[in-house]
Length: 159
Ligand SMILES: [Zn+2]
Ligand SMILES: [Zn+2]
Ligand SMILES: [Zn+2]
Ligand SMILES: [Zn+2]
Image (tube, rainbow, N blue to C red):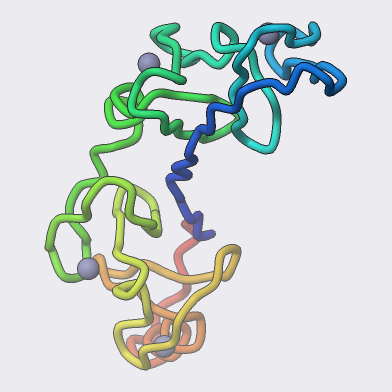
Protein backbone atom coordinates (compact mmCIF):
# COMPACT_ATOMS: atom_id res chain seq x y z
CA UNK A 1 0.00 0.00 0.00
CA UNK A 2 1.30 3.42 -0.78
CA UNK A 3 0.74 6.50 1.26
CA UNK A 4 -0.71 9.69 -0.05
CA UNK A 5 -0.60 12.98 1.69
CA UNK A 6 -3.37 15.49 1.29
CA UNK A 7 -2.72 19.11 1.87
CA UNK A 8 -5.09 21.98 1.70
CA UNK A 9 -3.45 24.97 0.17
CA UNK A 10 -4.87 28.23 1.33
CA UNK A 11 -3.59 31.27 -0.48
CA UNK A 12 -4.22 34.90 0.01
CA UNK A 13 -5.25 37.16 -2.81
CA UNK A 14 -3.77 40.60 -3.07
CA UNK A 15 -5.52 43.47 -4.73
CA UNK A 16 -3.09 45.85 -6.35
CA UNK A 17 -3.70 49.13 -8.02
CA UNK A 18 -2.16 49.41 -11.44
CA UNK A 19 0.41 52.14 -11.83
CA UNK A 20 -0.41 54.06 -15.00
CA UNK A 21 3.21 54.22 -16.14
CA UNK A 22 3.92 50.48 -15.97
CA UNK A 23 3.51 47.98 -18.74
CA UNK A 24 0.17 46.16 -18.44
CA UNK A 25 0.38 42.67 -17.01
CA UNK A 26 -1.13 39.65 -18.72
CA UNK A 27 -4.06 37.98 -17.01
CA UNK A 28 -3.54 34.32 -16.12
CA UNK A 29 -7.23 33.66 -16.66
CA UNK A 30 -7.97 35.07 -20.10
CA UNK A 31 -4.43 35.83 -21.31
CA UNK A 32 -5.39 39.40 -22.20
CA UNK A 33 -3.63 42.47 -20.87
CA UNK A 34 -4.98 43.95 -17.68
CA UNK A 35 -5.91 47.56 -18.33
CA UNK A 36 -8.18 48.01 -15.30
CA UNK A 37 -7.31 50.23 -12.38
CA UNK A 38 -7.03 47.23 -10.07
CA UNK A 39 -5.75 43.74 -10.54
CA UNK A 40 -5.51 40.69 -8.38
CA UNK A 41 -2.35 38.82 -7.54
CA UNK A 42 -2.63 35.17 -6.56
CA UNK A 43 -0.58 32.03 -7.18
CA UNK A 44 2.24 34.33 -8.29
CA UNK A 45 0.14 35.39 -11.25
CA UNK A 46 -1.94 38.41 -12.14
CA UNK A 47 -5.66 38.32 -12.80
CA UNK A 48 -8.53 40.54 -13.85
CA UNK A 49 -10.97 40.97 -10.98
CA UNK A 50 -13.49 39.07 -13.12
CA UNK A 51 -11.13 36.28 -14.13
CA UNK A 52 -10.14 34.88 -10.74
CA UNK A 53 -13.15 32.68 -10.20
CA UNK A 54 -14.05 29.54 -8.34
CA UNK A 55 -14.01 26.54 -10.67
CA UNK A 56 -17.22 25.25 -9.10
CA UNK A 57 -19.61 28.10 -8.45
CA UNK A 58 -18.03 30.83 -10.61
CA UNK A 59 -17.99 33.32 -7.77
CA UNK A 60 -15.39 36.06 -7.93
CA UNK A 61 -12.69 35.15 -5.46
CA UNK A 62 -11.43 38.68 -5.08
CA UNK A 63 -14.55 39.38 -3.06
CA UNK A 64 -14.99 36.26 -0.96
CA UNK A 65 -12.76 36.97 2.00
CA UNK A 66 -9.80 37.20 -0.38
CA UNK A 67 -8.50 33.69 0.04
CA UNK A 68 -8.55 30.87 -2.41
CA UNK A 69 -7.91 27.18 -2.15
CA UNK A 70 -6.16 25.08 -4.71
CA UNK A 71 -6.10 21.39 -5.13
CA UNK A 72 -5.39 19.26 -8.19
CA UNK A 73 -5.10 22.39 -10.34
CA UNK A 74 -8.53 23.60 -9.32
CA UNK A 75 -9.04 27.04 -7.90
CA UNK A 76 -11.86 27.01 -5.40
CA UNK A 77 -13.61 29.25 -2.94
CA UNK A 78 -13.63 28.26 0.70
CA UNK A 79 -17.20 27.02 0.60
CA UNK A 80 -16.61 24.69 -2.34
CA UNK A 81 -13.31 23.55 -0.97
CA UNK A 82 -14.99 22.53 2.27
CA UNK A 83 -17.81 20.88 0.39
CA UNK A 84 -15.46 18.86 -1.82
CA UNK A 85 -12.52 18.15 0.43
CA UNK A 86 -13.29 19.56 3.84
CA UNK A 87 -14.78 16.59 5.63
CA UNK A 88 -11.71 14.75 6.66
CA UNK A 89 -13.27 12.40 9.21
CA UNK A 90 -11.82 10.71 12.25
CA UNK A 91 -8.27 9.56 12.64
CA UNK A 92 -8.15 5.78 12.44
CA UNK A 93 -5.38 5.62 15.04
CA UNK A 94 -6.54 7.93 17.85
CA UNK A 95 -10.18 8.25 16.66
CA UNK A 96 -10.22 12.00 17.23
CA UNK A 97 -11.68 14.25 14.57
CA UNK A 98 -9.31 15.64 11.98
CA UNK A 99 -10.19 19.26 11.31
CA UNK A 100 -10.58 20.41 7.74
CA UNK A 101 -7.45 22.03 6.31
CA UNK A 102 -5.16 19.90 8.39
CA UNK A 103 -2.70 17.72 6.56
CA UNK A 104 -3.70 14.08 6.70
CA UNK A 105 -2.37 10.74 5.65
CA UNK A 106 -4.73 8.51 3.77
CA UNK A 107 -4.47 4.75 3.54
CA UNK A 108 -7.29 2.82 1.94
CA UNK A 109 -10.46 4.24 3.52
CA UNK A 110 -8.67 5.38 6.66
CA UNK A 111 -7.32 8.82 7.38
CA UNK A 112 -4.76 9.66 10.02
CA UNK A 113 -3.26 12.68 11.67
CA UNK A 114 0.25 13.22 10.41
CA UNK A 115 1.51 12.55 13.92
CA UNK A 116 -0.52 9.40 14.34
CA UNK A 117 0.68 7.71 11.22
CA UNK A 118 3.46 5.40 12.38
CA UNK A 119 4.08 1.70 12.75
CA UNK A 120 2.09 0.69 15.78
CA UNK A 121 4.75 -1.74 16.95
CA UNK A 122 8.05 0.09 16.49
CA UNK A 123 6.78 3.64 15.93
CA UNK A 124 8.63 4.01 12.67
CA UNK A 125 7.36 6.98 10.67
CA UNK A 126 6.56 6.75 7.01
CA UNK A 127 7.13 9.15 4.20
CA UNK A 128 4.92 9.68 1.21
CA UNK A 129 5.50 6.78 -1.15
CA UNK A 130 6.81 4.45 1.57
CA UNK A 131 5.47 0.96 1.81
CA UNK A 132 3.39 0.05 4.80
CA UNK A 133 0.88 -2.61 5.69
CA UNK A 134 -2.51 -2.65 7.31
CA UNK A 135 -3.28 -5.68 9.39
CA UNK A 136 -6.43 -5.88 11.51
CA UNK A 137 -6.53 -2.12 10.98
CA UNK A 138 -3.08 -1.74 12.55
CA UNK A 139 -0.42 0.16 10.67
CA UNK A 140 2.74 -1.89 10.33
CA UNK A 141 6.10 -1.30 8.75
CA UNK A 142 7.40 -3.91 6.37
CA UNK A 143 9.75 -5.46 8.95
CA UNK A 144 7.07 -5.89 11.59
CA UNK A 145 4.58 -7.11 9.07
CA UNK A 146 6.91 -9.80 7.76
CA UNK A 147 7.99 -10.79 11.27
CA UNK A 148 4.38 -11.19 12.24
CA UNK A 149 3.78 -13.41 9.28
CA UNK A 150 6.73 -15.62 10.14
CA UNK A 151 5.51 -16.05 13.72
CA UNK A 152 2.07 -16.92 12.60
CA UNK A 153 3.47 -19.11 9.88
CA UNK A 154 1.24 -18.29 6.98
CA UNK A 155 1.98 -17.01 3.56
CA UNK A 156 1.72 -13.28 2.87
CA UNK A 157 -1.56 -12.16 1.42
CA UNK A 158 -1.36 -9.92 -1.55
CA UNK A 159 -3.35 -6.78 -1.01
ZN1 LIG B 1 -8.56 38.15 -17.50
ZN1 LIG C 1 -17.11 28.34 -5.26
ZN1 LIG D 1 -4.83 10.81 15.34
ZN1 LIG E 1 7.52 -1.41 12.73
